[in-house]
Amino acid sequence: MKKFVTLVFSAILLFSLAACGSSEKPKLKEDHSLYLITDQGTINDKSFNQGSYEGMEQYAHEVGITPNYLRPTGETTVEYIDSIEKAIAAGAKVIVTPGFLFEEAVFISQDAHPDVKFILVDGVPNNAKFDATHEEKVGDNTVSILYREEQSGFLAGYAAVKSGFTELGFMGGIAVPPVINFGYGYLAGANLAAEEEGVKVNVKYTYLGQFNPSPEFQNQAVSWFNDGVEVIFASAGGAGNSVMAAAEEVDGKVIGVDVDQSAESDTVITSATKNLKGSVYEVVKSAMTEGFKGGEILTFGVGEDGVTLPDNFDGLEGFGQAEYDALYARLKADEDGIQSNIPVLSTHGDKVSALSFDNVTIESIE
Image 1 (cartoon, one colour):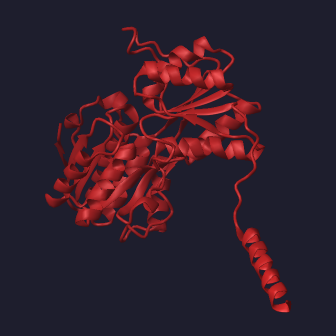
Image 2 (tube, one colour):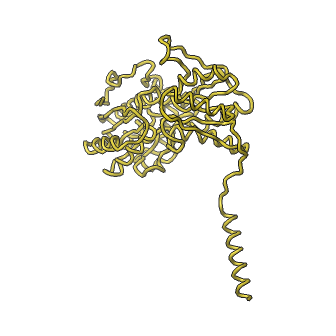
């Protein structure tokens, strides 16, 4: 009998210790005030959907309410608006829409629902698809969050070449402004590092046409690696996972995007990041409390520490924290015009073939 009691006591003790050591999720009140509508991909895409969702989620958990999201049935403005309407019908007071593809949907919905606050990440509301006037309008109930992706891409391209890579690749998702600017900055950073190192760099460059993973993209990346490309910057949302799978298959290297993607694959040497979580958190908080800057466009770059590389430099041989800090300071100060001279879509157009660099040769693949 004594043995039985001892065993029971031991079992209870072990259970209690296990319970104390476990990390319980916060108990949240069911609430439908906060919604995120995903762009192509999911809230687990390890890219801009997830980064934006985590910012909203952080605020929701702080105040003890549920964060909510919807994934549209398709990828058209009509389907995006339908998801927005569903969120509002469920009780949404604040809606986060991550992605350039939401520009038309928010342009229409902000006027249709003036009591709902919209946070558009990576875009500015406009009616380009519906009216030749291409009117932009950030309503009083809307805030647009933009980033200086060209600066983040610049940091990644510079770091890659400083680490000894001279055969580079760029695979963008859809040729939308953030992706284009990531790519242009990547080329400019590689060019400056190549000049300083006295080397020439070759870059294969393409847009995949979507942000979702595909065996086709994996095969294309394998082909690039087999042709001599050493590292591919995959500014492609979920499609970046196809590039990582290719790198794992043939011992290639990858540069991630939007958030630190090193946990996704050992092939990721660094990531060109944007402070999605932090910036979305702050704007969601203001929308739910006070200080919401309706009608404004907020832009985050090196000046706001809104674009960075992750602080793990293990994948970058010869380029560590000290070198990164020095580069970041140069970029922030616009030393010798290195910030001002990064090409961007608004000044250089959308054809990478029109760009010219002294130390980088671009092979544009349609």
